[in-house]
Image (cartoon, rainbow, N blue to C red):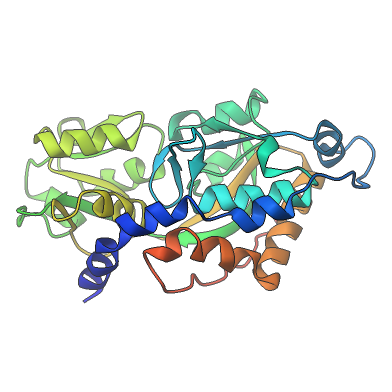
Length: 292
């Protein structure tokens, strides 16, 4: 029943994605740019004085971060970034969006190529060794996308007894999570730098499935109506967080405070309804921020 429900909402997603271009107008309007009083020497003070911020996100993930016709990405992650920028007193027009695929997210943060990353970024202990996380701000779940005529793959366990190939991206949590389900990782797991290449490979028959988070795959279904379907239910829980430089505790506290404020004052749900919520009308469960 859940698959049918997701498929049903996905059928409406092409329209929703078009509407997404209008999403975030309120955030844009609210961020007029202003001088704010932050602690001397803090990241918040630096960014407010500069009146600009570099935010890493993905450019190929419908509903969360998909590059639009104007050259900027659109989606839920993008709207969360606009909320953060507005709280820093920075207009949305002064955000520099930096494409940040999964494999280089920690690197971009460590090299200060971005000020933070909001990119369907699962919080885990391995990544915490290199960077810090604020959040989570959303809980997703990993699942599998197959061609509409594929009937042998019904979930992750199907790969234990077949030679079918599955695609994910380099350095991603989904690529690591699927490995225990494969009878031959070297032969069955195909990885690219971005998910759009997985989608091309699935269309061309080079792979038999794609695995990543349910919301991302639902977005791809929406762009290719009738060509794909989800195989089985979600089999993981993926808490999405905001990545930032390790040890910048004041900035992490600021980000967590901003997320919690957005949960209660309506900005969070507005961002959802203007993006992914156009496809899945169920409001997301408000997560508990982990102030570790």
